[in-house]
Image (tube, rainbow, N blue to C red; front, side, top):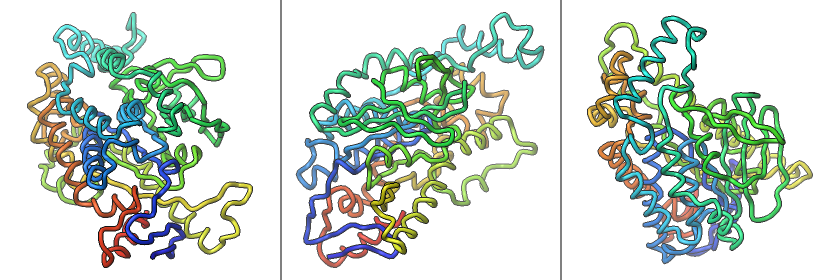
Length: 423
């Protein structure tokens, strides 16, 4: 048996299976455009782990699913298949396995030419000269059509009504007010929360909410959504998302598995890329998008670790009127630099997209980070799915312990518990 640890996380292991309560276990998936194919690979790996312990075609091991940006789209796929985890994981893997850029945004010569000319004209002569100022570099209408065919909001409600799912949440940023808004549906009534520049709104989540959350700034157009009796324009929820764990905690999670779509921060790949003089616009843009998509989760994890330690030293705070409680978190992120994988697949981008990105340096190795968000092509996404599957397999014992309370054998039990309980 293992109970507790110095960081203040509280979980018990006794024997081979302690029957953890999946209702309070949350899955959080972050954004990253085409990089979110990695999440589909991790979910496939989790489904294999579930099958190994006889839980493959049962409900998903997460009572709460929260997603942002492309992670919201993956979350929606799980939410409508909450009663059958294996099926949900298989469908997401199949989607990412065969996706093409023109499934997500228009790549035809006419549309790309008009968009590129409009942006260049606006930059050269000013927005005031434009009869219709460009709203985004790319037209994401194909993504809306695809989601309209794949996502059925009524099936989310059916998952909630059956109890297979406790809550589903999608976060987007309001360009109109600067607030982060978490739109959520839940099995039981959960009172909306409000924090500084962060609010929650109970609603019936639709395709428009998914499109808004996944609208990468400047690349995809904003979406109008109704909130508090009026409409506001929304974009990618990862922007200024300083507390990505917050929605899951407010929805009742005491344990969170977070799947990122950003490579672990370490030196290596960028050092091998020729400097090439002054950084290209794509290189600058890649770092800007990285700051949007990478920073929030790691900072939030650090805060959570400090809170867990505080609760361990002051246990009287846990469970008080303010709702303080220790929360366990396990994270999975790419073990290999996605930029390097993208650099090997830049030529798979449609010709029109390469022509648009070439003046910005987006078709060079040093611009691969920027291009990776738009690389919705099978060769790239399949490589990310395979990486996600490998990373899940490498942490199979820890994941089995975290999700199902299963400790393979006796000797490794303490080590596995120590690993998964460290945010």
